Structures are given as C-alpha cells and as structure tokens.
Image (cartoon, rainbow, N blue to C red; front, side):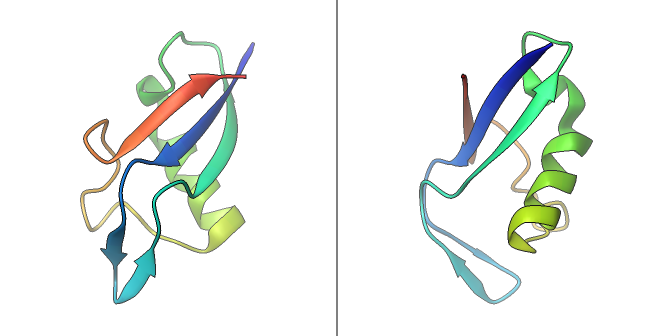
Amino acid sequence: MATFEVKTKQAMNVQGEYVDAGLSVQISSMFANPFDEVDKIHRAFLRVHGINLKPEGYLSMGWLEYKLI
C-alpha cells in the first residue's frame, strides 16, 4: 500500500474560506494514482482541515497535486 501526499496547487476560495496553495493531507491507496479513490482525498481534507472540496469542484488534478512519500 502506497502513501501519498495530496496538496493544493494554488490558492482557492472554498465556501468563503481562503485556502492557500500547499495545504496538504496524506492518504494511503492500493492504486498508483490516488485520484482513483477521490473519496479518500475528500474525507482526508474534511477530517484534517475541515474543508469540503467536493461541492466546489476542487477534487481534481487541476486543483490538487500528489506525490508518493
């Protein structure tokens, strides 16, 4: 199982809250691309930072980047 760091590429406004570039979470995945389990990324940002990226459409590779750690 691989561990990935997923972080924001650029600053964004999420439901009236400013989110700076570089805000990150860590997730583990059985897949080579963590975006195959986008719900894990969604839940991690909710749990760690209290930020819901799903309704705003920010759960994509256009807004987030990842690296294997």
